[in-house]
Length: 127
Figure 1 (cartoon, rainbow, N blue to C red):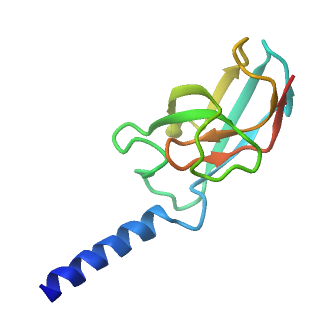
Figure 2 (tube, rainbow, N blue to C red; figure 1 turned 90 degrees about the horizontal axis):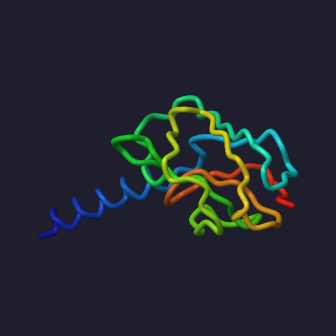
């Protein structure tokens, strides 16, 4: 029984350590910081050297597909998106072009990439 408990605790520690990585697997940038409806925004991201796939918590383990959306400024890395831009983004592509549509709410946001954990861009303003 003791051995089983120790094995389970070691497994939990290893999984938590992997999902709770201290360093971001990628950084997100945008080409515009103030946009209007109808504008296009080039979203790009750079993988941190040494990052290996799959990116658990960020993208699908099989396809590397993930979500991109708008978050409130200074939100935590697990908050829900205020507005989902797309749910078929591939982390392996390193860039995405977003056309701001009429449904996009105005305000200040950060663009986030990831489905459970997400990394964010610098703040943008949708006017």
